Every structure is written in structure tokens, then in C-alpha cells.
Amino acid sequence: MRYFAVALAAALITSFFWYFRINAEVGSIASGITPLRQSNDSYQFIDPLVGYNLPDNVKQVDEYATLENDIQGLMSQENASGSAPDVYGVYFRDLSSARWMGVNENTAFAPGSLMKVALMIAYYEEAETDPGILQQKLTYSSAVADQLNGIPFETPSELQVGQSYTVEQLIESMIESSDNGAKNALLDNIGASSLGEVTTDLGLPYLDTTQNYDTYSITPKEYSVILRELYNATYLDRQYSEQALLIMSHAEYAQGLVAGVPSGTTVAQKFGEAVSGGATGLAPLEITLSNCGIIYYSSHPYILCVMTQGKALNNLTNTIASISHLVWVDVGKYATAAK
Image 1: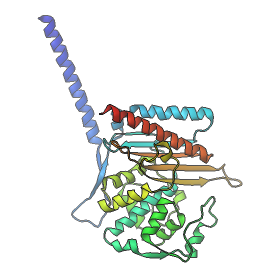
Image 2 (image 1 turned 90 degrees about the vertical axis):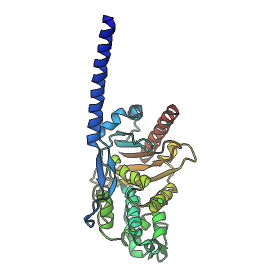
Image 3 (image 1 turned 180 degrees about the horizontal axis):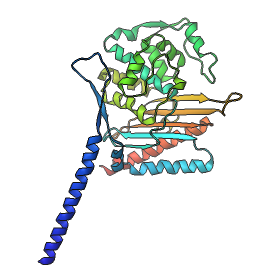
Image 4 (image 1 turned 180 degrees about the vertical axis):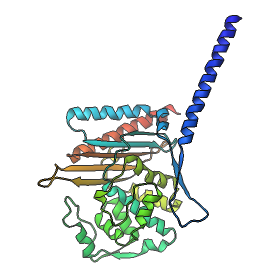
């Protein structure tokens, strides 16, 4: 009987210990959850909620704890073969559970064309009060076309000088084929502060229409906010959030994230490139390649944002595809175990 009482006392002490420990951990996590609210001084009585930011330590109890090791193992293999990027950052988020994983997720990169999604959002935000803006016709002028001249490695625009296009058509061209002529035409037609309001509202580094994208930087974790708000329809209304992701799912870029998942998988995504150096007297050519999107795994859709920098574009492309494949396999394992 005495031994039973001792065992019972030990069990109770252990239970209390774990109870208070777990409560302390839960309390620590809860205290770190902060609301993300739209920064708009025009409202007097409301403070619109955009979403919530979770504290970094939430990922420590993540179902995807092995994924970080898998990615680091892949990078070790690429280092050994000489194909690894000089710098990389990864952010993953399971949209069905809000669990996330990151490797160098707070490292900043030049986003390049990734920020075209923010420009699309700026137009759709205006369309919520003035739907006619999407059918407004803009003429692709020689002045706008000339903005692409002299830019290294620039792909010519598919737009025709003198031809008129609706804003909606230009948005589709800018996102689906990453047409920089369409981007420039849209930038020239929107208020200078409109893009800045979107980035500020989403808690991102400020970017307006007068800034050079090449001088702007953003982290994989920061950029994922754009995708989260579109998926949850917490910034734009449901109609325009759906439309934005539909257009992104038609993106022609079939490398990177798309190459790492089974054929036919729906991926709403955008890629971006930036180039620095390479001229006489400057540092060697450095290429930044990023690809961020929502991969619609049947039961566990997820965000994956991979940013890389190095000297060989083909290696960077392969790295993103390999990471995308690792994530797809890991999500599949979790989805199977959760059934």
C-alpha cells in the first residue's frame, strides 16, 4: 500500500509539473500572437484586421520539424557538388494548420518581379470602390516601351506600341507572362501612393511607384504575407482575392516550384529575377531568383517561398525545384499520417 501511495504521489507531481510547463509554453506562444491591422488613418471608428502573426517559437512544435533538416541536407549535397546558391531563404506554411517552417526565412533578397503581385493587389483594391478601372483602356506608348531599353537581360514586351489594352488585360499579361511592358504601363497609370499603401497595410517594407525594384528587398517570410492575405481574403474582398489567385495559377513559368510537384498540380505563383554586377570594375555577376506561391495539395494547401542568389541561373532554378519536391513529399507524409 505504501508503494502504491508513493507511486501515486510521484504520478501526481509529474502531472502537475507537465501541466504547468505546458501551460507556460502555451501562454508564451499566446502572448506572442500579434494582430496585423490595416494602416489607414482615414478611418475614425474602425481598425480593420488583416491577419495574425505567430511567434517564431510556434514552429518548434511543428509537424514539419524534419523538413528543415531535409532542406539543409539538400544544401549540403549541393555544396559538395558546387551547385548550391551563395545565399538562400525558405519559408513554408501549411494553410490548413498555420504551422510553418523556415530556413534563413528572415534573409532579405531583391524580389524583382515578385512585387508585380503587390501592384495587381493595388489595382484590385481600387476596383473595390471603382470597378470601372479594370476596363479602362491604356495605350502602350513608345515612351513606356523605351523604359525597357538598355536594361541588361530584359525580355522584350509582347505588347504592341500604339495598341490599347484594358487594365485587366495588362494585369493578366504582367502576372501570367511577367511582361515588364505591362507592368510599366500599369505603374504609369496608378497613384504614386497606391502601391505604398498596400505594402504598408500588409506590414511589408514600403514600396511606391517611384522606387526602383532593384533597390528594394524583402524576406521570404515577409513576402508570404501577400499570399496568406489572398488565400484568406482578408485584405481584398473574396471576388478579387479569387481573381488574383486565378491569374497567378495561369502563370507560364513552369520551372522552380511547379517543376517540383506532380504534373497537373494547381500552383498560384510568381517568380522574380534580379541581376547585379557583371560590368567592368564591378563585382562578379550575381543573379537573384525567387519563386513564391500557393501549392494546392488536396488536403493541405501550403505556401512555399524560396529565394536564392548565385552566379548560375540554371543551378538556382534546380535548387528551387528540388526544395519544392522535398516539401511536397513531406506534406504527403504528414497528410497520410493524419488520416
